Image (tube, rainbow, N blue to C red; front, side, top):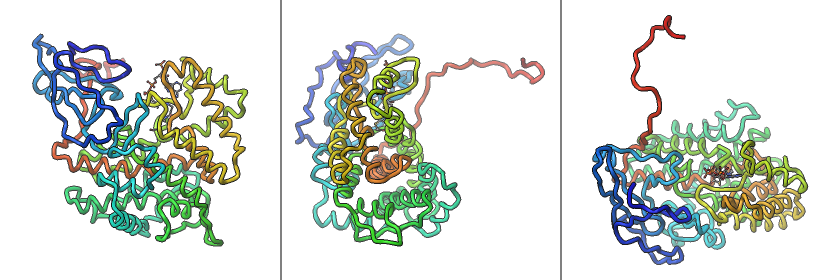
Length: 467
Ligand code: CMC
């Protein structure tokens, strides 16, 4: 690319050919969604030495994007961006992140405000429908979700095919994928009503599958959903109730669970969401697309980090061993990383982590576990890391996963269920993004290109002539 300056602090490059874009402050919440507009151009040189102008598109807020859609068909060039650090794969009106400032908003509402004032059902509606529901809409939405919480009884048979020690994420990938074999009346992706029913079914049934995966692993009978409970209450009830006695739901725990769901609900074009979009772009069955997202989420660099944080804290064991692990995290010869630290997008405190940290204190207080040694260890680790030159210069801050595991453990979930809980909460984000993609008239199958570095053409060698 020619005529562009080095980006400041990871911000988008700006063309010098035309007036620079006005930076719109995130706090300016009055800005309404708009279709992207081309306002300028960057100049590229093609292999024949000819120069071309590429349009630069402007969204509502956030960095502008160079529109390279015609780069290959008109100029014979591909872009090269492994890991997609500078690539916008879609336009979207659902979630906005400013990683430099540590801002996350859904449909224009700050995550901190949603976590404090809203509830998960409302956030689900907001993500799916674009607006907060009024009282009537909320009631209807809650009814729609509640109505779909039960599973086809045949699905329960899948569980007995697994070993009792199967990782619950393995069970999730399989059983959520298997929903595609059951709900044929909601798989025509071109029918808006079927899309909506598939969306409701996924949000409603994934918690039931998660709870069954847990119950199966501990050898207890499945607990069926109860429709008078809220989404978070029902989730706790299906996990921790047993047929032999009454189960009392702790309201502080239910509130914390609901907040954890809100904090994980969506995070724009992250790895698992992009996986769902790519899977869905071929027109695949919606249940199978969400199973693909669950598979991607499982990795320790993504949703598997909450489980990895707890394993790491247990391995560190005591405060005096923190410097040893900090040293390992900084070493180029050691592949150990401080789990729950760092983020591709956030170069500031992850706003979800701040809320999670506060929630962690509230839950431990309510459960009388204020002296939880892992919390003390985590806080000390955070303090030391945030004063360390390496973490400061690399802009590595705690992310959402750093404190969530401590809360989940205090509530009673085993470590292996942590990523499952992330998947339950993220299902609405995946579904909303999948729906937005299907409803986008410009949508095409996702198909990246490559920079080929293998052999050129060579003749086939018969086996007797090979070394
Ligand atoms: N500990 C130590 N060093 C780190 C860490 C860490 N947690 N994260 C990044 N770095 C260093 C990395 O070694 C590299 O250093 P250098 O430039 O000197 O070679 C630099 O920071 C940039 O790292 P990167 O791997 O290029 O960054 P990325 O954007 O590709 O990776 C990440 C982002 C989240 C995968 C990474 O920070 C990481 O592995 N963190 C630990 C896992 C974790 O907590 N994941 C949860 C993410 S939040 C939940 C979610 O949305 O899924």
